[in-house]
Length: 175
Figure 1 (spheres, rainbow, N blue to C red):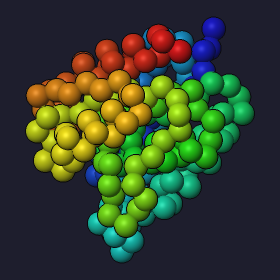
Figure 2 (spheres, one colour; figure 1 turned 180 degrees about the horizontal axis):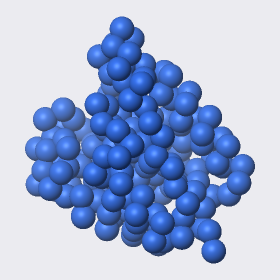
Figure 3 (cartoon, helix red, strand yellow; figure 1 turned 135 degrees about the vertical axis):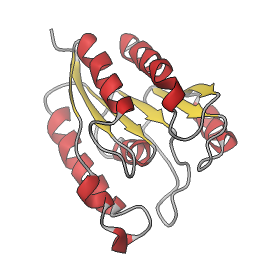
């Protein structure tokens, strides 16, 4: 039985086959959720729009996919770094059941500060994240009463892929 759908958004200068989103796609499938991993690499390459590519177009693309998926049943958005930012922002426009955010930027240049729908949120973040201070994420999580797992890692969380998969499995099990 299909429980719902998960959209997994990779980070900047990453791709849909990245280690973390691949591991979480496997978790979703094992838990009975369909999933997709959109490719944003074309938009990330558009550097004339700024340091992080075309974030606005990323938001539009994810929102379009999320709107279509939400019409079919429960939706969970997952993202890493820039993918976490866009997932959270899109949750304000499309009904989602939960969010799983890895290394979410609370501030992203001229873009609005990080915000998200009032749904269950689970976050994994590295204590030694060189791009996004752990304190900023902890403060954001505390204000929302989000589940937060801080790990001894940097922005890529490459030493904690299994921990991210376990935290994501817990989130899905609780829905």
